Length: 428
Image 1 (cartoon, one colour):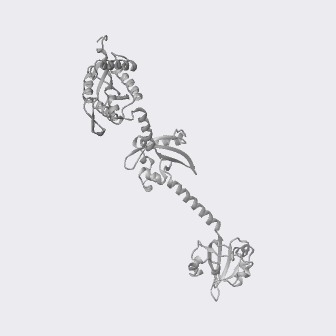
Image 2 (cartoon, rainbow, N blue to C red):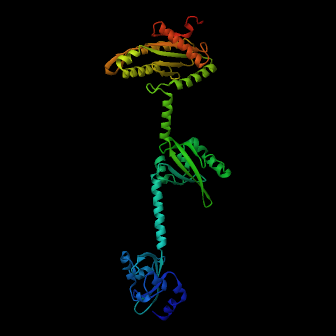
C-alpha cells in the first residue's frame, strides 16, 4: 500500500468513524480502523491484518464472496450480508466497496461495513406486527374499509371482499357508493361533503343501521360504525361494517313468536288486539261495516280425550287453514287459545256479507279431518257475529256482543251462526 493511501487511513477523522473501514490488497486486510477491530471482536488490529476478508464473512454468503471483491464495487448502494466476528454472533451489515488504486500485484480496495442489525430487527419486528395485524384483520368477520373525504375507498379487508362480493382491485380507488343501494348512494356525496364543511354528523363516532348491496345486486342489512382520522393533511374515515342479516332474522322470529300462536301460526290475542283496533279506526274513517266473528269449535274435547292431543293439534291446525281459505288476505283470523278462533272482516259492502263467510266456515270446518293413526275426526263450529258500529264502537263492546251471539248458537244446538242483532230483545 503506497504512502499516499496509508496517509489517508491514518487520518484522525477516519479513525473516529463508527463504521468498519478497512483496506484490502489481494483480498487481505492491510488496514482496519478501531471501529472495525471492535466490530470483529478482535483484541487489536494485528489479530486481523493479513487475513482474508472472506474469513470474516458468514458462510451463507460464500457463493457471493466467490465472485470476487471487484463484483461488490459495482454495487454503489452496497450489499447486505453478515459478518462473522471472532467468537461472537453474526452481525448484519451493509458493505460498500470502492477501488482505490493499483499496485504491481493487484488492486487495492476500501471496504466499509455499516452495522444494520438494529434496522434489520426493527424491520423484522415491523413485518411481524404487520403479519399479526393482517392475520387479525383476516379472521375478523366485520368488513373494515377506509375512504378519503371524496368517498373513494383506500383500503378494504378480506371480510369486506367476502361481504360485498368484490375483489379488492375492483374496490380500491372507487367510490364507496358502489357498495350501497340507490336510496343511500344518491345522497352519499352531499352528506359527506356537508360533514367535511360543517363537521356536523350523526354517523361519525356512532353506529347506525343501513343496507349494503352485494356485487350480485342483493341488498342486506348492515350496522355501520364510522371513525375519523387524519393522515397528514388528509382526512380519512374508517368504517366497520357488520352484516346483521342473522340478527334481523332472529329479532323477526322473536317478534313473530310474540304475536303468533305457536301451533297454528295465526295471530295470537296480543296481535288480535292490535289488528282489531286498527280495523275499527279504518272502519270509522271509511264508513263501511266491520264484522267481528267469534268461532268456538263443537265436539273438540272428545277428540283430545279419545284420540289424543296429537290428533287435537292436527284438528286445530286444519281448522286454522280452512278458516284462512274462507276470508280475504286483507282480513284477519286469530286464535285465542284452546278451540277459540276469531275473524276480523273489514271493508264489507254490507253487514250481511259476514253471513256468507260464516256459511263457508261452517261448511269447511265440518269436513272430515284425517288425524294420526289413520283415524277421522269431525268437529262443528258455533259462530257469533257483531257489526261495527251497530253492535259496538269499541273493541270490548264488539267482543262482548259477538261472544253473546256465539253462546246463543250453542244454547240453540250448535253448528250454526248468529248475528248479535238477531238475539231476542235486540232490535234490527
